[in-house]
Length: 109
Image (cartoon, rainbow, N blue to C red; front, side, top):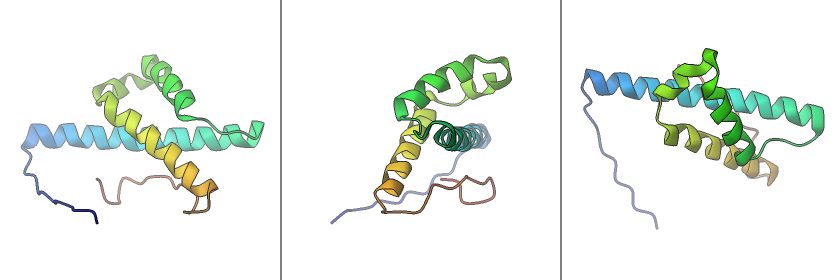
């Protein structure tokens, strides 16, 4: 049996801004690499692994158009890549449906 402890937080304005930036960057990374993995799978028949995505993310953050990704915590971006890889593994083992793109208007967690 798993025990769960839910805690409500009351962030100040600065913390709210930081959380919003992190949520936005994580959502962008998820959607970007979901799209990139889909395209690569259509072209080559193989998707991207976590290592491939992590290497590419490092290069992506260095590009002038994506420098804003450096504002987010690196651990959150890497965790979103791990979650995406896990979502694909669960899909291919027929446990869940195909991973979906994340929306700004749904629950932020």
